[in-house]
Image (tube, rainbow, N blue to C red; front, side, top):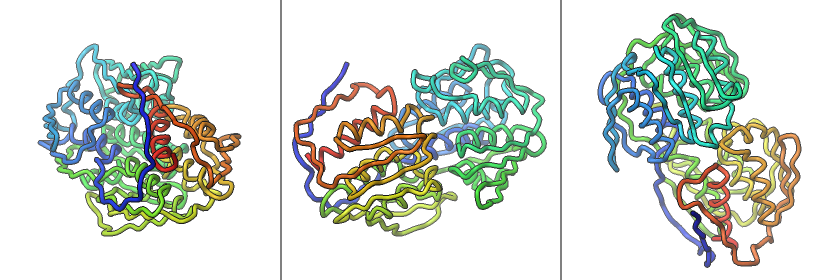
Length: 418
């Protein structure tokens, strides 16, 4: 069943202060760490998204008690070896790649086979990139088509540490290996291409035996077996990916100003800020401080008079991987040609984001070229949508990341330029 969204009025200039919901990456990791803690962990501002709720359902299936209301979540951790592995257990990761991949590292010692399933979109994604390194610990995997969900994991009680090079820049793969190393006698050594480091930072706050040496292009991570995880009470910072839609809305609006409070500006997540600054958007980070290892700040965004094109450095790709589709909208309004290179990883997400990004721009009327993971966007600062636009949204949960990005992106564009 479908629903039509009609945008009738152009948005007026605004000056607002808002607070966004909690960071998804931190929310899921908090749920997983807390499930193995010794005692009750409490969070505030936990993101109530379907991915996070799927993580909560997963740990409940493993015997962990959870109390959830609109303001707080309490998880009654059962200790590092407290999971209740039952026969014929099925865990549904739904649409969450983070949950589906990370939890495999925690299930590495399961005494019974556990089946991991997901929705149609997640079932098309590559899980071989996680099962291959985890099998080196001693676990066994059976995957559909040797790479997809559903998969079955059969853990081992005789795990052995590994040495592994993670060269894709995938925080999910790296985190799954860290979690597996936490259950393994000896030292697991990971050489990892730079990517999000939320798992490492949370491990440090929890004082787990995990050390990180930062090199120029990669990190050296050493993981030893964890005997005990303390409780973690956490007021989760605002999500920069959710904030990004409002940052772009402000960038595309005239004479507007926005403050977003308490945003997680982890260095591995602020690619969108660096990119938009290069394009002329005024973004200031105020009241910077550290909380539970994460850097947070209040972001102040001012709309610019003109937007500049960008030859985007590939070094910013991993830190903006979830925001490129709306960054493309800014490039569409820039005065000149923008180039974004080496974005093949975008097509490894919930949907082929790079291909869908080009489709979004084409529907708006923006010329693009797409080749070998790179997209060139021919910006047009004078473009306007000239007719009434009716955009379909699914009444229930969208079936792919494209549905979300397409509907939200066009929604912002219509409000600004209709």
